[in-house]
Length: 199
Figure 1 (tube, rainbow, N blue to C red):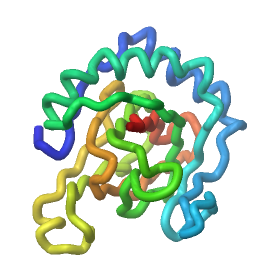
Figure 2 (cartoon, helix red, strand yellow):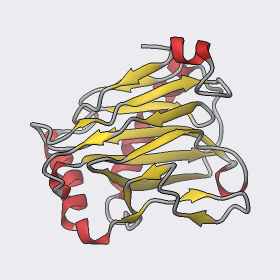
Figure 3 (cartoon, rainbow, N blue to C red):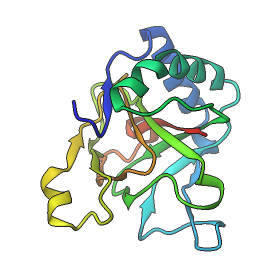
């Protein structure tokens, strides 16, 4: 697609997709407000920068996702022209984005606990037909500023597709566009498993 990202469709078998979606649906009450890292590397809520809800309790589902990601990793790294590295950790969370929620342009790596993130993946497992619109993943790549005219001109937008996954380098600038979900029901959310491979 582009050297900035790699999109793979039908990433899990239909029964696995149902398991992953069901896992999140069964724990809707456990999702908490998303946070961002502050300058002192402490997590804090910032509704002007990011609005969504996150599930951190993923232990029971972790092996399924980690195994599938690692299976595809050699192909992903080759396509993205990423030099092989020893994976120290696969960090994982589930994110629900509902009506009026978004995540402004940011990088997934930086300082402190996210410094060692090398590759990001976003797996979409919302239900079909979709109960939301928007929520595109907009990718600016290695640019410093999303408002840079060249960054805007060359940006890619990925529309959420059920059972697809997007891989990209964690230092690439990207954003999640605002979601519209008229029902405001959790089951109609933009639902993703977000992961990071740490060096």
